Length: 111
Image (cartoon, rainbow, N blue to C red):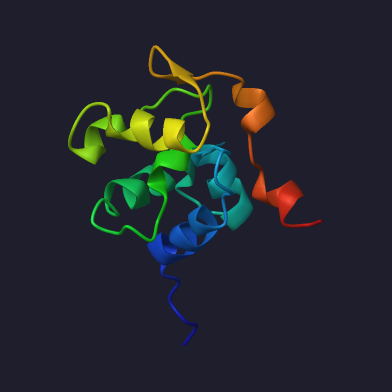
């Protein structure tokens, strides 16, 4: 019988690799891991890790850089504060210079 994948743990492993001061999005992680449920599965994983300080979920935003998961951090500004502490500028709930700061595991981990 084939081993069952623990999708959430696979997502968390990738998220732990995102460097400080960089961001990625749900869909990019999903493509990297070949997840059938795609970005939605990554979103569920991120929603489920709010008690996991070892998973820097604040570095995962939506496809255009919006802090779409900020409500899972308890206080409304925590996600922004965590990003700004790493040097990421956020204005109107959106990462400034999103394309410049974007981290793609398919590219970055292949180096």
